[in-house]
Image 1 (spheres, rainbow, N blue to C red):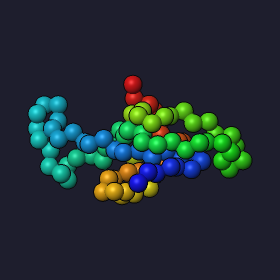
Image 2 (image 1 turned 90 degrees about the horizontal axis):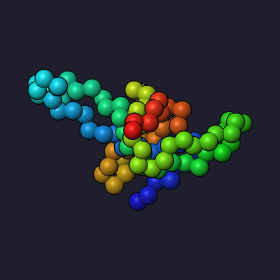
Image 3 (image 1 turned 90 degrees about the vertical axis):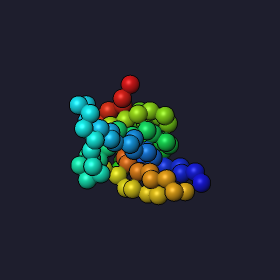
Length: 94
């Protein structure tokens, strides 16, 4: 099944959190922070949103940093995805 976001929405897949710290300590599941880096899966067309013209700056395949509690979590074909507004994306990771 494919997901086509509408307006200024972006479908992202969170990148797995690190299993160990930089010093080599293995983290338990509860000690891991929610990842904030994600890969863009699909991008809406932009256009007029709430009376303002919105230009989409991200594209499928980009790695981005999102707001910590942004978006709506969905599960499609057993895969955990999030749908966020483009304004919830803070930066593109290059």
